[in-house]
Picture 1 (tube, rainbow, N blue to C red):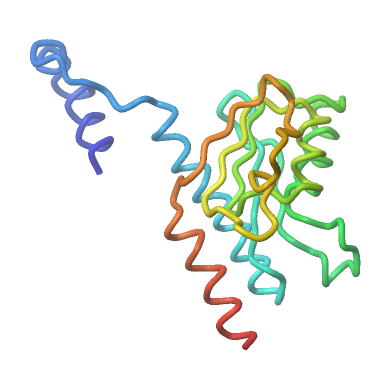
Picture 2 (picture 1 turned 120 degrees about the vertical axis):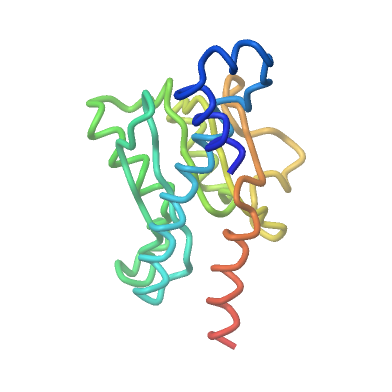
Length: 172
C-alpha cells in the first residue's frame, strides 16, 4: 500500500514529492510483488489440475514473456517443472537459448535440476517466494548458478507457502 501512496503523491503532488524528499521504495521491490502474484496465478492453475502448485513467470524488460506451472502428473514427465516449461517458452519467444536480462519469478525455490537449467540459460535474476528445505538448490554447499545470476528470496513468502500447504493438507 505504501507504493500506492507514493505513486499518488508523485502523480498529483509532484512539488510536494520533491519538497519532502520521500525515500522511494526501489522499483524492483514493487514489480517483484506484482510478478510474483502472476507466478501465484500459475501455481493456482497447477493446483486446479491436481499438480503440486508451483508457478513461474519469466520477465524481460518489465514484460512477461513466458509462464509455466507444474505439469509432471499431467504429462507423466518428471522434468515438467514450472521453471523448465517457462525457460523453454522464454527461449522460444526470444529466439535463443540464453535468458540474459531476464528474471524468473517462481513460487518455490528451484530444485537442483531447475537451478542447473537456469544456470545454463544464464538468467540474470531468480526471485522465489518460499524456500524448499528438502529439495531447494540453496541446500547445496557449492553454488551451481551462473556467476552473474542474482537471487532474491522471500517475495510473498507467506502466500507461496500457503498454497503449497493447502495442497499437501488435502493430500494427507
